[in-house]
Length: 147
Image (cartoon, rainbow, N blue to C red; front, side, top):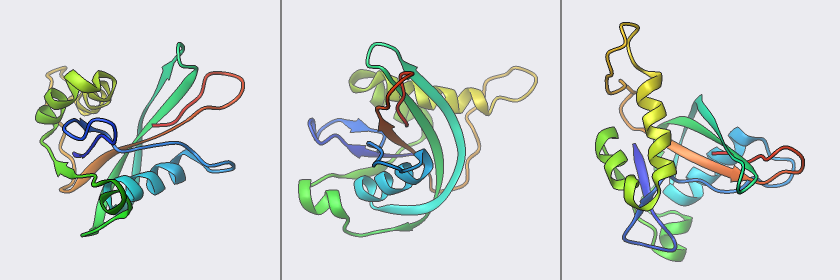
């Protein structure tokens, strides 16, 4: 999976993502955010899950993106020096546990969603260059945000 450096803590890794613009759909926001933060384009895949945070009053939609293009320079790399790096799923979970444990939960969900029917846990088989990415938003009414 592709992780990016945090804008607040450049030595920490996070799942790329951000907020939705007015009238923007969650999937569209996710594609835009991963382009801005990670400098990649690709094909939007399945919705991995919806994660609710009652305390922060938002809902997060997490998607899988199959990367088809990797830019050498991108918006956040130029403007804030953001980095990106590919990780094996297990390694990404370990890296995220300390700084962004909720992001590690997304990857745990990825693993669980790909378990065989006999119940044995397995690392998911994803296409090469698959990136998990995130987009968040706050919305009126029921707590809502997108990952």
